[in-house]
Image 1 (cartoon, rainbow, N blue to C red):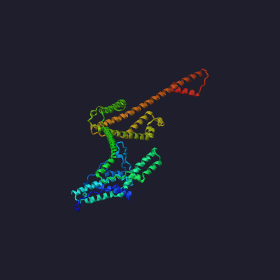
Image 2: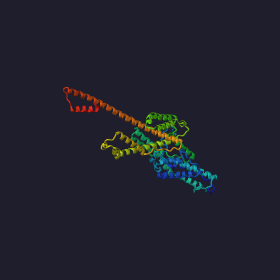
Image 3: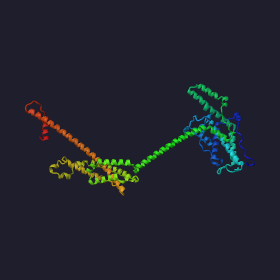
Image 4: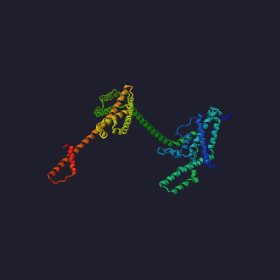
Length: 520
C-alpha cells in the first residue's frame, strides 16, 4: 500500500501506433541509442545485486536482456524478418565476428536496437508488476531498501520503473525506432536482394537503383513492416515473441558450439593420451622396465659382441681381466633379476648411463691430452739424449742421430705413449656401496673393454692388410727385376759372340745392380 493507503497502480498503457505515426517530432538516433544503453546497464546492475527480483537468466541461448545486450556489443545482427517461420533448412551464419571488425554499439544503426528495446519493455514491466504485488500485499515495506547495500528504497525503485516506462513510450522516441526498423528492412534485405540480382545478371544496375528509389517513396515506405507494437502485451508474451524470433539462430549456434566443443574435447583427450603414452615410454626407458623381448635382444647383442671380440680381447688383456670381464658378462645375462619383473632396475641403469657418460668424457679428454703431448714431444723423440750418445761406441757416436735402430725407436715411442696414457689420468672408479652398484660398475667396465677391443681389432686388421699389400708389391718388383736381368744376360751373350745389337750403359748398370741385389 502507498503512503496514502491506496494500492500501487500498474503501469499505464503503451503508446499506440496511430499516435506514433502522426507524431511530427523524431528524436535523434544518437540520443535514443544512448538512453537505451544507459537504462539497460542500470537494469542489469540492479538484477545482479537485488536477489529479491529473482535470478537473472544465464542461458546463452535465451533472448534475455543480458544476452541481447551482449550480442549487440559483440557485433551480432538480429535475425531478418521471416526467419522464424522457416524450418531446419534455413541457412544461418554461425561464425563470430573478429574483434577488430566489431564496431562500437554507438556506431551501429538504430535498427539493431529493436530486439533490445523489446527486452527492456518486458524487463521493466515484469519487474514493476513484481514490486507492486509485494507492496500491495504487505510482503515488503515501501521504505525498506531494495537490497542491504542499496541506497534506494522499494518505493523509489517502483517510481523509477514507472518513469522509465514513460520514457520508453515517448512518441518521438518510438517514432525514431520505427523509422530505423523500416530503413534497416529496406537497406539490409530488400535492396541487398536487388544488388544480388544485379551481380547474377538477372537485372541491370539502373533497374536496381530505380527499384530501391521506389522502396523509399513515402507511400511504399509507410507500408513496410516497422516496430512491433507489443507494449500492451504481457511480459511473458514479449519474451515468447523474442524466443520464436531467435529460435532458428540459437539452434544453429548451439549445434555449432556443441560440434566445436566435441572437437576440442576429442583433441584434448588425444593430446592427453599422447602425452600420457609418451611419459610412460620415457618412464620405462628411464627406469629400465623393458619387456622380455627387449631383454632377450639386448642380451643377444651383448653375447654376439662378446663372441666377436673374445679372441682379440684374450690376446691383449691379462688372464685375470679376461676372467673378470667374462664373469661380469655372465652375471648380466644370467642374473635372476633379469627374469623378475618386480625388481626395480632404475638405479642400476641410471648409474650405468652416468658412468658411461663420465667414462666417455674421460676417454675424450685423455685422447686430446695424448695428442697434445705427442705433438709437443715430437722433437725430443727424434733427438737422442746426450747420455745415450755417450754410451754409444766412438764409431757410432758421430752417426747416432741418423743411425737409430728402428725397433728401439718404436719401443721408446710405445713406452712414451704408455707413460703419457698413465699421466693423463687414472681410471675413474665409481663408488660401490652395494652389490647392485658393484654389478653396475662391472657392467660399465665390461662395455668399455668391448669398445676398446673393437677398436684394437679393427686397427690390427688394417695394419695386417697394409703389410700384406706391401709384401705383394715387393714380390712383384722382385719378379720384374729378375725378368729384366734375364733379358740383359741374353743381350750380353749375343754381344760377346759378335752379334750386332745396341748396348746401352743404363742396361749395364741395371745388370750390375741386379747382380749385387740378387747376390749372383
